[in-house]
Amino acid sequence: MKTSIGLLVIPMGCAMMALSGGCKDDRAEPQTAVPADSKQTPVEDVTSPPESTPQEEAGENDKSPHAPGAVKPPADAVHAGLVPRAGGPPADAVHGNPAVVGDKLSLAGTTMTIPEGWKSQPVRKSMMGPVAVFHLPKAEGDPADAVARVTHFPAMKGMDDRNIDRWLSQVKHPDGRDMTRDDAKISTTRQGMVKLTVVDVSGVVNPRSDGTGAGAPDHRLIAAIVDHPKGPHFIKISGGLATMKHWEESINAFLKSAEAD
View 1 (tube, rainbow, N blue to C red):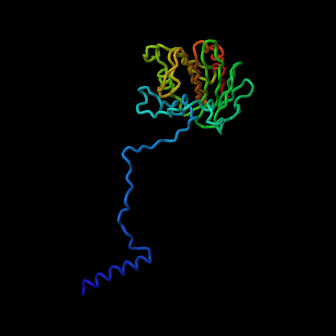
View 2 (view 1 turned 30 degrees about the horizontal axis):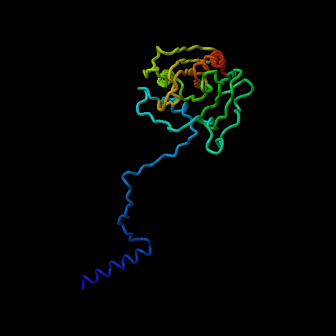
View 3 (view 1 turned 180 degrees about the vertical axis):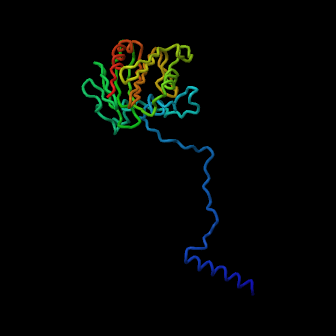
């Protein structure tokens, strides 16, 4: 009789507790099995720039010994604003560039003079993308225009050596050997409040910051750090040897035209 009473008491207690939201079933719900070979595929923005990202200028995508375990950018990334999405141009592309007025490029903290013949390209409105992109029309014998890209990452001030090493890691000798500082022309000059560091190196130039993909042979890279109170700005210009030679004087004039506001 005691047993019967006990059995009746428990259900009645649960029934009363159920009215107040109690007596929940604590048994775990069955879990859906995940196939062992399932993978998560990240969504990649195909218009994100491969050559110059904040991580690149910071050295986070650097493949040199200075940045082990670096995160690679999307493998199929293309130039921001230069290659449109399927069906049309990027929705956030700027047709032209408000920073370009006549022959002047007005940047945060500095102004530069755009050489005659340089073609301003659309840029994405993004805190992380380039602030200006220019095409330097190709010379006879080269397959494509040279491209100049300007970025601004003030948090990277003081990382000059790291960026020099990263740029050199993107260029190889024709036989595949790594470039060293002895293989490049590296100069640092000061003009007023502007400190200009320039790296000039030729070889097989890889356009990707992570070093993946095939490099372009017989190419030249001129990369510069334009440092000033609101800098630095990073300028990376690359193209075929004939094209870069044709525009060499205007490239040097462009870099030396930087004036701090």
